[in-house]
Length: 302
Image 1 (spheres, rainbow, N blue to C red):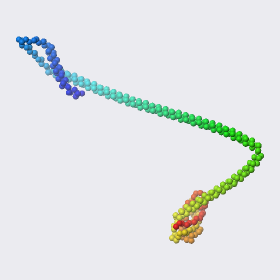
Image 2 (cartoon, helix red, strand yellow):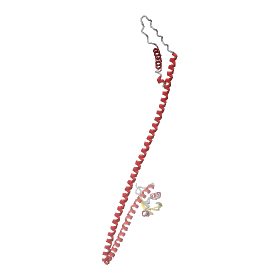
Image 3 (cartoon, one colour):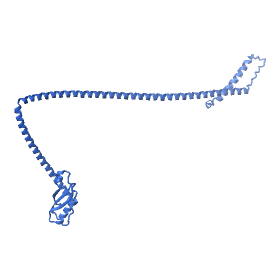
């Protein structure tokens, strides 16, 4: 703050000094009588200048400077107080703004919560209304079904009563025809059941035969995979092997029942069957029964 007054302080001192001189001269001038016109014969009156006391001037300047410094100190104090008050007001405004934001956020949160609650209640009311309508619809359907059931029961009862009346009227004839019809139907059912059983047996037999053929092919491939060609083998040789297995396909016996004429080839075929154990016997009991003991022709290609 002192720096801001430094440039005009000399000017103020000079102004105060000139003001003091002006005041002293003015006072002197007021105490001096108005000069008379000077005649040519009279000599002019000499006015003596009044000397200004330098000590008084310095004292006045010091007093003015002290007042200026006091004024500056007071202005500095006012400025500090004003700045402190501005900071206090700014802090109050900041706190008020934060509180306002907090209240706004709280109000928005409450409003949002109220909207969500309203939506939840509306959804709940909607689901309750839908459930009420669904139950009402089910009740209408139940009543309609009950009505139809009662009507159907009445219709059946009336038809049953009519049938009984008609049956009573022709009881003897109906009983005879019924006995004949029952006999004919029983015979027809018996024949139909017998035919169905026969067809089922034939179909099952065909299915078992097809599976047996497939299994024989798999066994032949598996045996050929284990077969080691003997040196004396020549293309076209074949032999029939009788094989006996236990559940699970394990080979317990394999012997040649029709020789190829080549003993080495026959032995290699039997060995190949034993090495191929266990054989791929299916779990179907009807098919597996066909492979407890079976024969197949071993004729390798090439």
